[in-house]
Image (cartoon, rainbow, N blue to C red; front, side, top):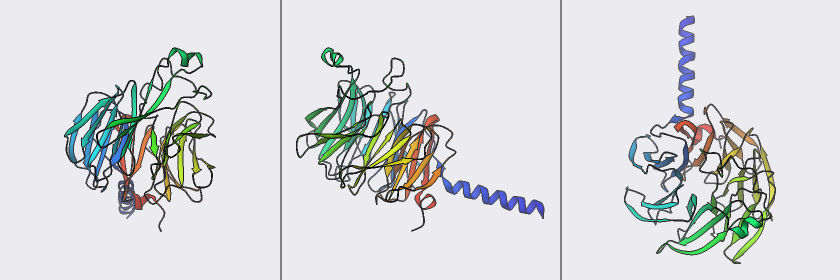
Length: 347
C-alpha cells in the first residue's frame, strides 16, 4: 500500500512537471532570441553559434534550420502580409528571409556590431541597432561607444534615417574588459516601435531611454529612472506602456498615455535581460540572470508567478501572438516553452 502511494505521488509530480514546460533541443550555445510566427504555429530561435531553428510550436518538431556559423543576435517576424523574418549577426549583417522557407531575398550590413532588427507593426519600416567606435570628436566629449539605430522603408529597403542614440551626458556604465558587453552577451541593445509607429525607443549602455518621434522628427525628452544601464525595451500591444529591463535588477513600466508615469517592478535578484507583453497587454513576462522568468499583472503591478529551475541565465522571453504559449531561452542552449494557461491566472 505504501509503495502504491509513493508511486502515485511520483507519477503526479512527474505529470505536473511535464505540464509546466517542454524543453526544445537543437541549439549549440546560448539562445539569444525567440520569435513566433504571426499565426503562432511556428517558433523560431537563434543562438550564439549561428544556429537558426524553426519548429512547430505545438509539437516542437523541427521544420528546418539554418547554420550561419556566426553569432545571431536577434530574430523577428514581420507582419503576415510581408511573409518575412529578419535576423542580425554580430558581425554587422542583416538578413531577410521568407518566413515559410529558407529563401534569402535581401541582406545588407551596417558599419558596426549589429544587435537587433525589428519591423514596425504595419510592416512599412525596419529598425536596426548597432554600435561602433566613437569618432575623435565624440571621444573628446567623453563618449566611449556610439549607439545608432537605422530606419529602412521595407518597399525597397532604402535607408531613410540614421538616429544617433548616444549622448555625452549619458552615463554609459562599466565595460567588461575590452568588450562592450559580457563576452557571451549579444542580445542587450534592442529597440522597438510603438504600435502606431509614431515613436521608437531603444536600450543603451546608459541609464536613460532615448525616444525618437517620427511625427515631430526629433528626439523627445528621454525616460529617466533606472540606476544602471538599460538592456531592453518593448511597447505593449495596446500602446499604453513601455517596459524597460535593466542591470539594476528592476523592470519599469512607463505609462505612455499618462505622461510617462513610472511603475517599478521589483522581484528579480540579478540583471533583467528582456521583457515581453502578452498579446492582450494584461501580463508582462521578464527574464533574468537569476535563472527565473517572472510573470506580472500589468494593471496592478503584482508579481503573479515565478518560473524557476532554468539552470542558467534567462536571456530571452516571448509570448506567442495568439496568447497560448510562453517561451524562454538562455544559457547552455536551453529553450523552454509553457502553455500559457498553465502559468497565467485563471480568468
